[in-house]
Length: 304
Image 1 (tube, rainbow, N blue to C red):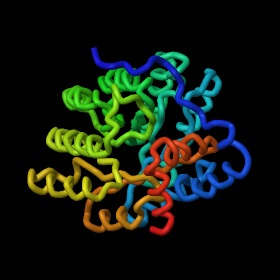
Image 2: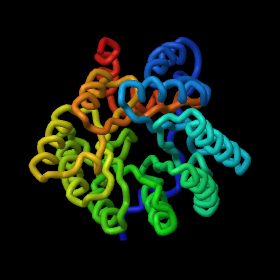
Image 3: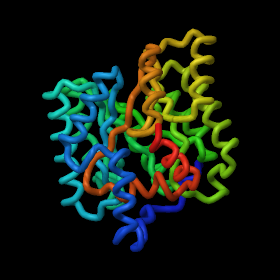
């Protein structure tokens, strides 16, 4: 049996000092670059701008760990409206969601039922829904839901985190199921018994999993800003004659913008992850606090 994480605990919310006063104001300045805005229209306009640069979009309505069915219903309604507006605006954008935003902490059945509603609308529009990966408490449940739904729907993908020691087994399973995988490093704090703590170990695992995914022929999103890994992906794909249509590079909004543009100009598929919504603080904190190097990374990128 694979490690199922640490139960159904919710991700830690930002502490009170970060949610109030000057600190929240400072964080909001950072957030302006990395979040499209609070409204759906902000995300659509950002996607249009990126599309004009030949960059695709993945739009995420921010939110997680909801506690009531009513909140889950609101999330579903928002994603349906988002898919409608993507269609009407003619932008090249998929949607990305967290199962805890659809009610996973209430019940697996509720989250899966809600996901089906969103996936069916996306399928109607020939669009794709990606499942974000959350903390290790959600890993097994997210994979279980994905595999269950993949039997019925071809238009879904899932994120896998290279810092988790279990991910090699997960990638092998997903490849065998024909899964589309977005490979990320991971941004949640996890204990050392289940997660690599050394950056080199995380990076080495990322490259190892990336190559397995590229060789599989399944759609693969290489989600990193690490130029060393990106260059290795390009070299490996060229050496193995892997079609550029079977993989894409994905990066966060506001980070390594010049690199995103240059990759698109080289003819690679590039996709920018565009978050929007009023629940922006947990996302921002996760980028800046949970891994200290991200603070320096963000500061450097203010001048990119």
